[in-house]
Length: 175
Image 1 (cartoon, rainbow, N blue to C red):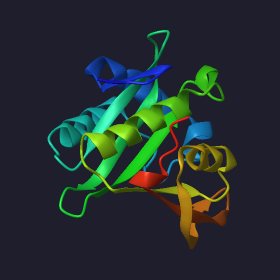
Image 2: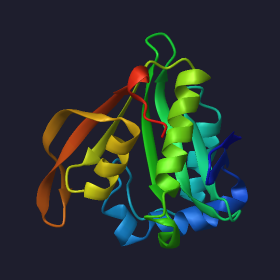
Image 3: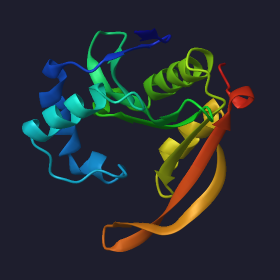
């Protein structure tokens, strides 16, 4: 477990999967996720969880609010222990917990864990250039724009750019 101020980051349990399926099939969430194929079934999520549990280069977690409610997922992926970098991703599935600082708290806690416990010197992520709220979240924590993958994703009948953002360990903002 990784403890933030407002959140607890814990292992994803089998009992979390029905809610995860619901969120991943929600069009308002899908529009901002990169790299997922929709729709997903409970069986798809069971297979995904089984695969990532056994993968040393992936650490996927559930986010619990201080209320004890499961509100989203967060994770590290493509972990490179030799070059000491990894990818990062988060989503808050429960709309009641968006905009309340939960994503910032969980992001800060997991990035700090990646740096201090796993020895990462750099984290990176990709985000749709149209996802202003997520970009602001990442900037608050210390991520910086490193590049743009032009017309990388097809959404809503048009191509959308994807931003590549990175954070070096000395750039983490914890306040």
